[in-house]
Structures are given as structure tokens and as C-alpha cells.
Amino acid sequence: MTKRDLVIRIAQETSLPQLDVAKVLQKTLDHIIEALQQGDTIEFRNFGVFCVKEHKPRIGRNPKRPEQIVQIPRRKVVKFKPGRIMRKTIMGR
Image (cartoon, rainbow, N blue to C red):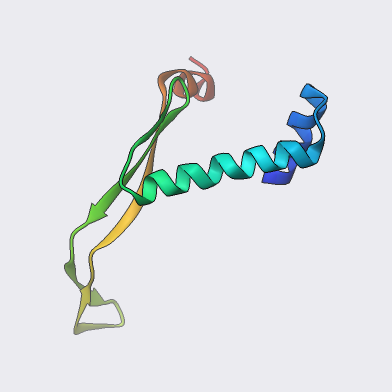
């Protein structure tokens, strides 16, 4: 499902114009990104939690040339942990 599919579906169910639904959805996503960028955690009850984790710098190796050591810099990644209801719904329990 794409963002466009979601906009169409919400517009049909709510009888709102697609343009308005698209604006609200985009603003919501923008605010989620902004909060994650600031290091906040985003929690949607019964859906899940988005948070930013930082991977420490480490040393890696080139698989084609194992003698070559590569320095992997620290980086931030977004993690998602599904909520209890989402897990139950998807797993069918």
C-alpha cells in the first residue's frame, strides 16, 4: 500500500476531499520525522513505537579482501516495535 492508496481509502471512508486528506497525512509524517530527528520517541497506542537507536562505530572487513579493514562510522537508525494489538492481529492470535 502506498501513501496515495491510503489517501484514497481514507477519503472514501470519510467523504473528505483527497487533497485535504493528503495534506493532513503529509503533515503527520513530517511531524513524526521531525520528532525522531530531535531524538523523541513516537508512540501510537495499540499500533507501535518508533524510536531512534544509535549504532556505535566499529571495524568491519571487506568480504572480497578479508585483510582489508574498514572503519564503519557511527550512525542512527529508526526502529519500530509493533504494539500488542498489531502483533496479535498479524499473527492471528
